[in-house]
Length: 497
Image 1 (cartoon, one colour):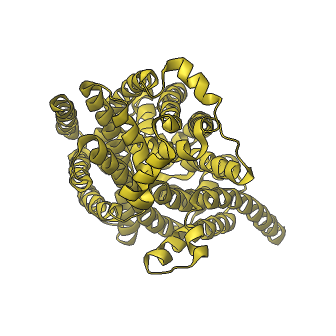
Image 2 (image 1 turned 90 degrees about the horizontal axis):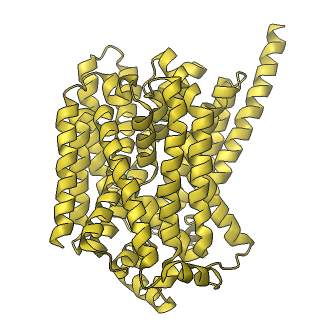
Image 3 (image 1 turned 180 degrees about the vertical axis):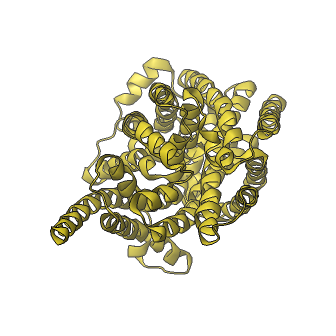
């Protein structure tokens, strides 16, 4: 265990060093929010990848999909690679980079205001972004907390405090510029860590190498026969975690920081390779859970951890695999790296949105230095609030689905459509936002009703359908935004004719 703690200590010291030395050159709002728009392909691609995949994926999603779908859960990792990374970069990266550079954009709400000429849309967007990035951030804490409790044997609350402090320090040192360079280091750690983890897990006694995998694939647990409802649940998860990134403000902001079109083209393949290894590997490991557990073992997990027991499946698997202490340290650092980078991305986006898009819009003559410090201070406040939300008894998958569903359901359509459809207008954008927001809000409101005492079976069922509602919200929002824009545009042309 000493080797494990030494590995973790070296990682933390490395991040602090990056923050200190890089933060000296991060002074303006552009430096803090978009890295001065000078990020190369490797920095941009790995920053995107590390923000995309955190302990939430390795722990919450991988454990849940493995438990429910066995090896079919690997489809989620492949979907994230093809739709959430490759297709997203091909269709969005260069056009977004160009628009951001031409209009001097720093945040997604600012993009919406300048594209549609609506300050009200910008203000609404910044409030929604700030509020609903909190459960996203909280889910990252919960993922790390389960790792600490099972693999390190320490109270998850203590570990979450350590992560909160580390993330806050990185953001205080200098924002996006520090974060991107830290993400580069963390991205390399993640790729190396997943490769080693795959090797040792497959060779473990529970799996039994390639022969064991082949035998597992022939069992009802390895490749279960899924009914229609189960396939819809799996497909919904794939679509939400893949296309959901298209409308998340902290992912969109990664494109704002790319230096040039050439760097954007190179970033496509770097980010796709990263996604294949990290997402594919993560979901693959989770899909092997039935080789490590029997039905009675799941009951013991449920008795120990309650409704959130699926969040402890992967950490317990890693413990049962008896991997070497050094590798255990690397695995924990891998999950730390993934989670700290995601936490920083989410926090920075939420803080920049609140300060620059809300306060600076209401008080337009605020000095840049005040805005810079305001963003850093709000970052710390956001981290603290997220920590308290993380201590609620809500599974990781539910927290993430509420956040992704509402944010992507609201903003994917007006953002992505505007890059290709010149006819997209303010009326259509508002219609798409309202449609997606209202649909995706249903599971989140059901969860609040449950927290405040509702015992309705219908409410309990709805709060578990976050991914399904998220997919319906995104699809409906795109359709409504397009149709209403076309109708409103046609009506306007008639009036002017």
